[in-house]
Length: 254
Image 1 (cartoon, one colour):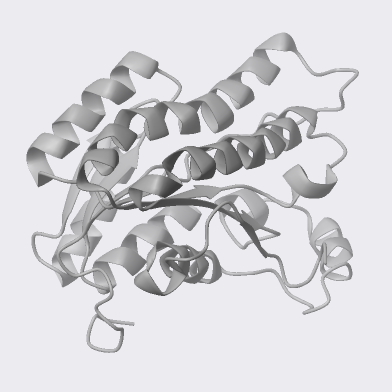
Image 2 (spheres, helix red, strand yellow):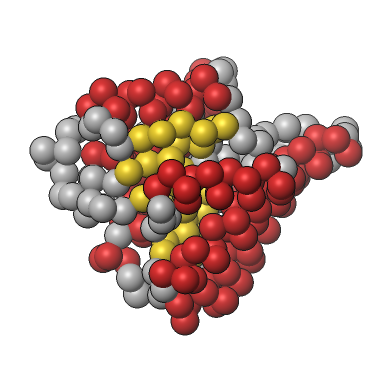
């Protein structure tokens, strides 16, 4: 879809999307640009960030700029926020999508794999919120959308670290929603189910088939399904929604 077929809900706004180098984050960045936003494309992998920004600029010249950071690094995120605010003058939307998995049964899960996942998925989200919230408070407006997971709602064998990080994200998001509501800032969570990305493509067909039988709509979702939900929560239409978790999973955990 091009910006000729979408409403320009985010014209004159600036969106920061972490983990935007591929998969869900890539789709979210493209969605915002297609609806008129200028986009700070953030990824730990600089080449991936540049690729996404170039793709956006090839369709919507000048709307995107690439940045590279490890969101788990508090000081680096603070420096990045200063750079983005310097480049764009303001930030209206923050989407915390950056995340990693290090799967194993709890009996075999290493301390390192626990720390990497919690530091990236949960601490990394906090780092980004803290880095940008002051500017949103000053302008008395903003949208924060954190990307959770159905694993954080129901758990998932072999993902103690990942499920804990995403469950923690719910508590963090509700707290931020309460703290910032009086300043016109909302904070919500989108919890994807099984989405067709590089991460799920490597699953054996037998596992994909087994998972699909648990999804009432009978298919994996697309990154664009998540991007559409994020865009809604970031839009003016969702101005009276905060502290909520929107599950986009084909009915899997209804």
